Length: 66
Image 1: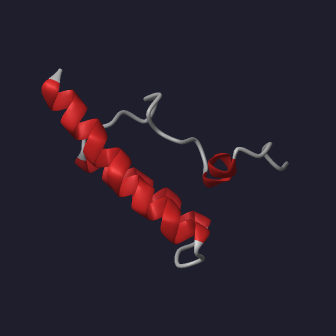
Image 2: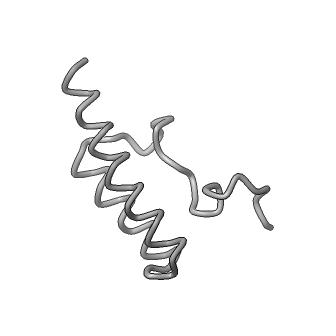
């Protein structure tokens, strides 16, 4: 369990930085999605993990725009 915790913590830390860059306009939503895919693969976080965000729009706790 310790290894899993370390991987998830590393993933969440990296994605926190990416979310901040997205909010500041440094990267686009497309860039954010690419970063998420790369970081998840690096830290072996499944694409269906509850610890991954579905999209950048979910970051603001606003309803999804359709």
